[in-house]
Length: 355
Image 1: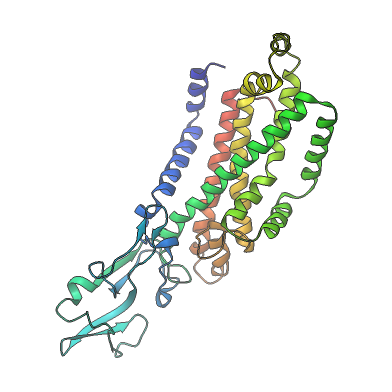
Image 2: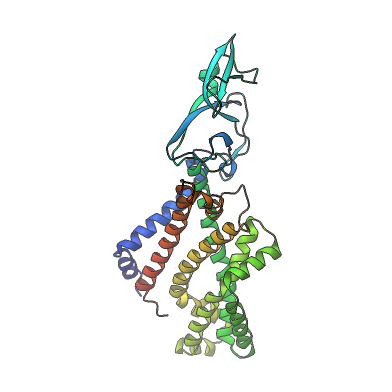
């Protein structure tokens, strides 16, 4: 199909345009997460237990114990700041004999204590050490900025999608290509392998692989990728079976082209459209699987922010009057999966893929 016609048909669908813009927006957010997030500490893990589970729009005074002028911080574009200033939420403060006394957040109104830092005096306290901090979406159960955790959690969901799709493409294209092109015992073995993997529930297999590799960030990526190649292999095999008897393939064999060249340079480019549609669906499935694993506690491990882990941590708040702590990460999972599924359906129609 003409490439211009594909683009025209795809972008004539408003839902495809909205989904594409939303996905690109989240990719931008993921890349510049630590530059966008209000809390740019590593994993947005700046805890303030005294202000846990605060509502949307919460703000309070903060005493920054280690000021930027006196405390050297090590920052990274991709990992955030490893050394951050210690922050103390306060209700009020007062000066006494040149020293600073603070009332920590949540303490009685008549309780004040001296700030244990010799560098802080009444002269420089308000200008260098006092600030007001705003939490647009409130705080989580550990007093961390919820918006920052959601922003940085975008990286986990998009990363799992890209890596899982990449792994599934490599394995699926190789196995499906070999089985469909060469046939015989090779094809029988690959079909048997596909059936075996297909007969095992995906989540159960991912859990088994994750436990075998160990719980962790990269282990989850590999485990999800190793379970998603089956659909790719099935589509590649089916497409090659229908194409390998075509005249152009027979002509290539007569001309003496190698099997490798025929398969990878003449046949595989023709099955890219159905692979694109499959990758979009697999991307959405990978996000759901990772979220499920994190909800079960065997996905990305704390303090790494994961949308599924955030749903798990705040699940009890559905009944405690603060359902948004669970609904917000749940909505981000739903919206991203819906965007990829909608884009996949639009791509299928635009590319005129026949299942």
